[in-house]
Image (tube, rainbow, N blue to C red; front, side, top):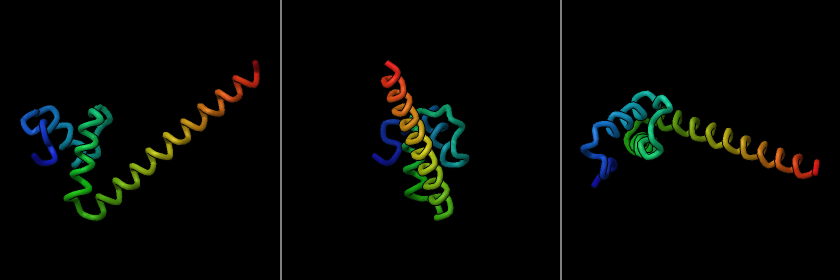
Length: 82
């Protein structure tokens, strides 16, 4: 069925995916569009585009990890106050 799958004829999804592939997206795309766009980059793009994506994904992972760690620390501090 290809990378677009059920979205093959959905112009909104195709537009979101294209925006991700060409420009990295603007943050309003659905998680599924982001996943598909990134899969396209990993599959057919040049190495420099794949490396930029790897850096972006690593940055997102680290940002989420720091957020999660801060939440755990805040929960621990709150429980120690009681």
